[in-house]
Image (cartoon, rainbow, N blue to C red; front, side, top):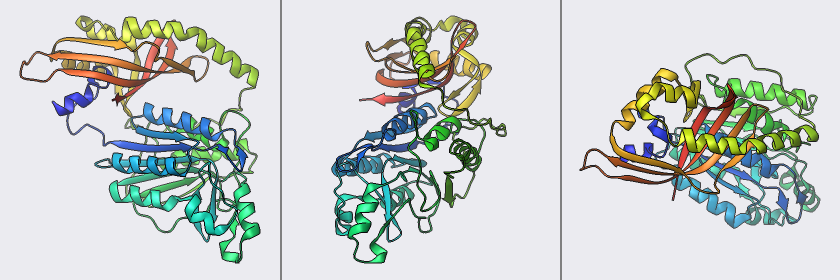
Length: 409
């Protein structure tokens, strides 16, 4: 029942296909540092981290996240990440905020850092390669995304007080030493400065959010699309790059089909359009809650085919894997056949809705579940899960296009 207990966190156990079909655990640490005690405020790193964390959850990652972290909080988050990586197949680290390189080594800058002298660097900052070492020791695939090359006042102050050329803090980040089984993406070229962005997200994070969940593309193809968008948006002032030593193809979302040609990056919507969009989806929050209570959480299991067609589109991405309607129907029917009774409920006040275009939204909420097995020797499954649904409007109502969940303590 251990495996079934895990699957019960997801609505209707849609991953109960076979032991071999279960994806490897994928764990991410997402950090956004923007409010610095001695370096002012960066507008977007926290937004970037929040949005990346939600996107990763929607494609099946377990996410540990923290924002505006001091050094102790940052080290605790890294320790929690290290513990969570045990038995994981994929580890991912995303960082947005100030970073710098000294003597060819890259550092994360906590928000409480005081870096007026190079000698304080080891005490005040966190070497990024230490995080990478932790990942490489515990996972087969290590992915790192660094949007940490903003114009950095720490680099300037350290350079003024450096006593040797080698101790000078340089703009941007440096290449890492040779790594194994890893892919490291930088928001801009070595030694260059990245933009924070004038909208909600930095150009790099905006492009990453746009492309990371596209089915069937390799991570290398994704970075080509990201780079193209960032170069276009910044008028060639910023050019993301990567280094890697992966031994096999990696896809964030796999559907067995080749990646589709990428569309050019759209220009950021004016603030008035964004505000109007938020109001529109805000008005729809009631209809989304009604959809969850009356359809998603109370499906008619006697007519499974009709239920699936009412809840989902022609296909849906569940924990990073795409299923067609027939596959969802089969799995759901098999799942409910095990239980003598069951109930699912929306935790009051937990629903959060985020717009993603005129006809799309993301719904995140806490779900209570209680499954009573027909087999009296089996354990009853009860608890709560954080559910993330990608929703699209179709035929006047909402349909699910992506789904994932994470257990709540």
